[in-house]
Image (cartoon, rainbow, N blue to C red; front, side):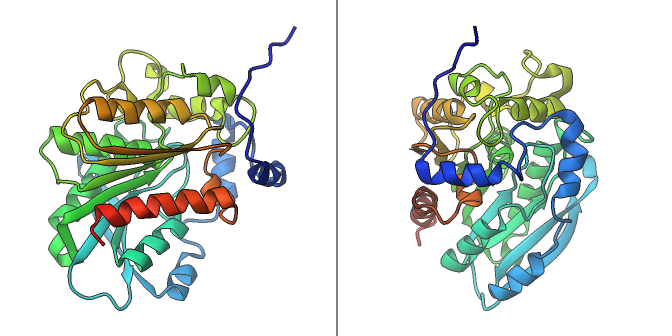
Length: 323
């Protein structure tokens, strides 16, 4: 007899979108599907310049030293008419550690650049499995150091620099913030962890609930973590910078904003991370959106829940940057 695992229902408006997406997005990504998923995605940068031009935003690509001094690329995005010094947002994109590029989530970045007159630096960190841990998080940290060191040139007020990332990028943002704390690196005014991928151990209730359903389910999550960590996934041989949920000391970190859906695999680890931050005396704001699947704000931006999610996130950034 098959046991049915109870889970929160999807928001009705989002469930209709999920039905439409079912023919376009595989429910569960296996290791064999990684090359195909990358091929199916738009080529890096395609359509980006048109979107930037339409939004009045300029782009400058810079090659910088990444992990071990290897070359990686970052893009600096700002309003065409921008002058003087203002807030900066350092961005780490999503893609399960295995796919995507620095322009994933561009729509979010355009709003932050336009609404907050922020300079955004988005990093092309290297992907697993070709570049396993620690390459992704160390590339991200290298990009943060470069951003801080070039703040004056970029027009960024170093006291108003925050880090932001979504999904895998949210986990990398949290890991980068931990490295910055431990290695006396750049000071951060805040960390925006958008439905972050934090825990490789695959032991939460939400990971059992979102198995073969929704977007980026348990199987996909195992694929991503296995690509990053190999045989170390789920063992004691995992760094807190790769899987920030394993950190036992979160004191001294910058204030955090965390959001997620109630019907996604990352729900419980994201809630636990917010609780751990509070326990360590760190300010954190947590939003769990009822019936939300993973990434619904990007895949269904027109829905009421997605617009509410974005508004809450933008409000926190606005308050944190003192705008």
